[in-house]
Amino acid sequence: MLHKGLFPSSSSAVPAKPLGDIMTDNTNPSNGTAMNDKNSNSRGGTGNNTGNSNQSRRDARIHDRAMRIAKAMETRRMTRMKDSEQGENKSWSSWRREQSLRECAKDDDGENIALSTAVQKNQDDDNMNNDTSCTEENENMIETPFGEMERVVINQLVEAIRDGWHGTPPPHVPSQQQREVDTFFAEDADVHTDGHHMSVRRGLLYFHSISQLIEAEYEVHRTTNYTSGPEGERPCTFTEIQIGPKRTTEVLSHGVRYISHKETGRKFVVVVGPNDYDGDPEMTIMGDRGEGKANELWKDMLRWFHRQGPLKGQVVDARWNFINHEDVDLDDVVLDHKLRTTLEINVFEFLKQMDELEKRGLAASRGILISGPPGTGKTLFCTSIMANREDATVIYITSEDIERPSDIANAYRLARNLSPSIVIIEDIDTLGGIDRTQVHGHPLLGELLNSLSGAESNSGVITIATSNFAHSLDAALRDRPGRFDLMVELGPPDKKLREHLLRSAISRMGIIADFNISDFAKRCDGYTGAWLVELLTQALLLNHHYLGINTSKSKQQTKKALELAAKRTERFTTELMEEAFKLVEARREFARQGMDNFQHDKFTQNSQALYG
Image (tube, rainbow, N blue to C red; front, side):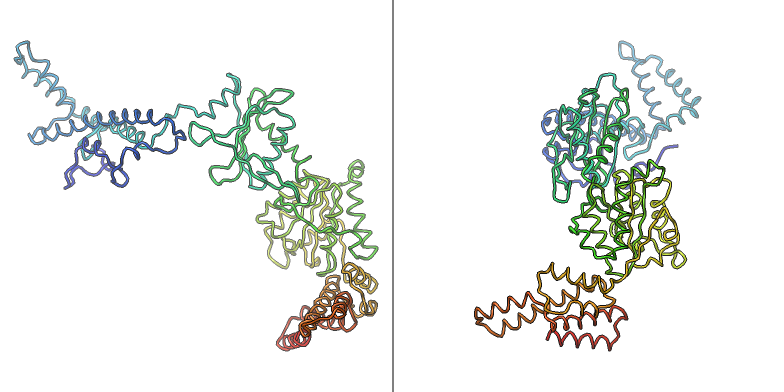
């Protein structure tokens, strides 16, 4: 039975075009357009533009080979058509044997000798072996528009056309990079390859670290870069990265280095560059398996990165980006003396005593939960920790930096490797800390609990979390020493602290307080530090607003008037503070109760009355 379906049926109404014409027709098989010699010789993927003459000779050989196959196929097709017209039902193999017998049965004078006997014997053999011979023959034949064709012939033709069209190099020919790698190692070396795929930020920092390690401990024999084809080189690629809050440098981001250790002489080949699939950084290390695994260099690089890499002792977020924090001193954080002492002991003193705690068999990790309404100084205290961290590494985590649960685990893994370190979690309730009895389980809660106190020890890590709703946190966070050992509640400051806050802020602003600070501190009962700063901000804006009105009314200012205006900008009067207090009180009322229509009208009237 013939194999059908691979080609269109030969019984089509459109006559089949001779294969010889097809092979000699200079057309593009994809769209049928004519191809000139220039297009025929240009093939991508080789990466070498110097071998055009060799490529042309190779194309000519392929074309000749395909033409010979096509002519043989065409001869068979025409013969079978002739036999079909004569009504003979003979197979191709039977016809070939008969032709051979006819040639062999001729004597020297060209007369046939016992031809009928030989032909009869051939026909008898065909009849006796009809079942077996036809089956074997048909299995190796495929029906095509050009007649029946052997599988071997079709495969040869397809391979010849594919090689000629795509210019595919012989698979057994190694690339230039592979040849040079084999030459760099010993002849009997068993080359072991270790590859790592990374995110963009992490990959570039690791590229910097491997460069620093190579510079310190290895001798570089050669640095190069290869084309995507089997032959050719191209320049290396360097990328500028940030290695500090205000420091940048260039690192090799696409290239190959051949190195050997300065002391042991052990050889490695380090390849860095973008991944072919998604373009993310990728590092491949090759080494002789007889001297050890190639990933030993990778482990050495990680140790260098954790001990003296660019993140060590810095303030970074969960994505390894540097944070430019404010330079806030501890004295700028106005807290109750008892609370301030407690926080300083559990953070800064704990950092100093970590080694002593481990020697005595105590946990060298600490968890502190700071709660309180907005504006009470939680974030300001965390900022002061960043500015006074000494040699500790700070990892600042917010909900914006967390895209998947593994990000929290990765942040804590980094904190352990860079210890001593401080992990600050801003608004932990937004990262899955809400009580599971009130809402359905958050996908980040399990990862958060496991990172705080799981199978891996957090030795050398202090966790500081802030929350505006500590009472709504999950019980596994609130009532579990080992996760949060200390809970501190920050409330609105008392009258003494409010007065201290006002005086400190006015002094930093360079303003003369021409009003009774103690009286306003008493009237601002319930104000947090943020609301007190807002009160002074409103006063400053009102002062400049009134100054602008007075300036516009008098186009020609005298020298004395300008001096009076300058003094006005440096002085807060009682009248000015009263107006600012009204605005802030309306804003606080809106924040406490929400805004209905009546409150909205009242708020609008007050604003219009003050600003005109």
